[in-house]
Image (cartoon, rainbow, N blue to C red; front, top):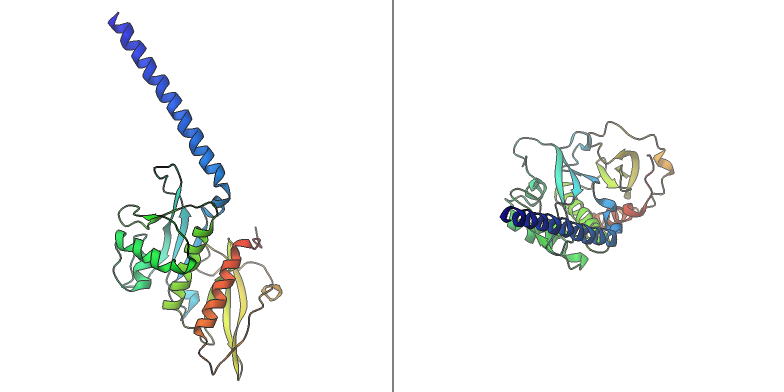
Length: 257
């Protein structure tokens, strides 16, 4: 009799766990379907060059967007993780926080990284949750109903790193996101009065060595940017234009599959 009761109890527990798993799976699926449009950036790679003195031999980090899990309400988070790097002596290495450490020129902890991200993305006027993601991990952010926060994080991080680490002067090259899977390498050109950007090659976002340009005639790319007069302080305007081009990258079709 006792053994039968134990068996019945075990069966009840097993059935309860099966039903609970089904309910949770359905709820998670419903959550994911509701946010299906926000997942088009998960798994995408994004390069961060750390100097444009010689872009073709520049130190860099390559990051990937991923989801580290769900919150208490079964809503997914997203974050970025470093998948490869090329560094020189003295540069941060080995953790997902290295980009923030190098660009901010100070030590960054898991908790201070949260404040850094909130400050960096303040201009976007978005409300979203940012929490710690584990030791030496980049913070995890809430995925909203659209991929706006994911896009903003990438654009703002690249904009900040570019502003801190690049020089916008003739002869230098610069990388600009063109689609979700490709970036342009452009050169700062000049004449007697003006400076401007001209596309030189197109690369997959993972080609951080810049040794595999895609077979695309970049002269045919609709890259209509303004010229800047040399006598004016134009760094902010150049940064604004590049930022706008990168925001547009999320809506452009990938050119080479």
